[in-house]
Length: 472
Image (cartoon, rainbow, N blue to C red; front, side, top):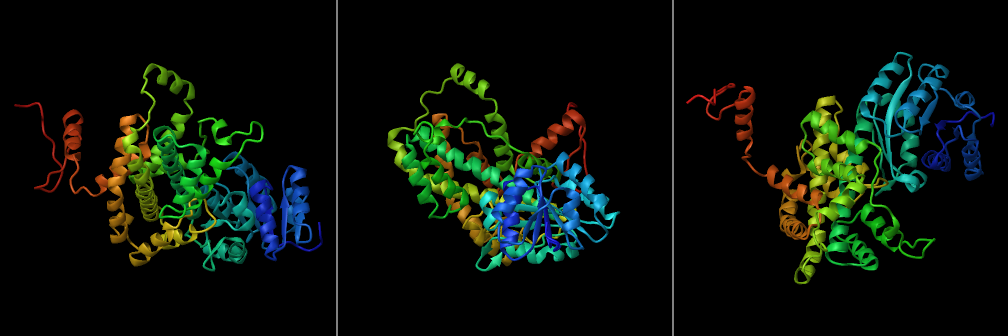
């Protein structure tokens, strides 16, 4: 270790932590890092050679190496590892020091930890970081929340290392408490939904239209030049071109059809239910990951409940191929609308004071859900900062309405062929339900009152009412 005190510290030098450390050093800030794995500490020293980056031998040495007030970023897995690390670090820190959780921690844990550390005079902020290995190294989207004075202490560093779009860093203080982790959680929920939608278009084209991997790659590359353009479409095109080093075939065909999850999508769905925010496409994306894990049952069910070859009739294939990108775009609009509406409701419920135009702005670069449409979303919230749902913006409402025929066409053709497209269909149903001034929930009110005396409300009178439905 150098005798010079470092400006910034990082605990956890895995792929994300180490690349962030090099990014920080590359922008002229001195950084010290520690990991329990000594090889990862050495890897930081090697990769940051010639820059002001140091490797520490212990958490104690790391804390000692930092200039006060210390600014220390934790890049470890959510849950127990964060708890253990805080227990180790907190006694070593002093009032005025800043501890940052850069992982995907549950937002309620962030609020609890901040309150506990505040008793020691230690600032604590939850920071969502999106962009994967490349983003960490070259510029992620960064979503910080917590005390504004604590953010101000690290603002120059975070703005320097964040992705840039039109010269603007993809980072902004989002609000107090757990605002940063809540926005990152919702970002991941949107990510789940977009990935599920893209996977459904893959299924329609592979099994329904009979496209091979080269044509799939070309199709997604073409879509990435249109209204659906975004990072996930870009990497999807590359996925279908990747050869397997072992067999020489395409790697995609050798990957098991089982998608795991770490919890952020599930948390998004759970909290949306608590807030009574409707996000059915995100809900369905979480459910489909769960269903994908039931591989043995699905194989048994396919044998017991056959559907045929699942191909779309030849005479319809050209029309379905033409409709697919428009259907995907309409569904994408629905996903962003649902996710941002959830953020609006959460902001009110938890006192975050989120500016949704700024959320859209910092999602334009660095993060996994970055897409061309986010610039238009930012403009919509600039026009109407209190917009409760993007579908109420004239431009987005018109775009969703224009995409509806394609969603209907693709969904109907897929259903006839036995191709599951639950997220695409949930997008269609959400749009139709949201623009329906009347829903059949009056029947549900009546049923609840019938079997449980839960009461109901009337159109022609104030108050709540109960009826003995079994009387003549």
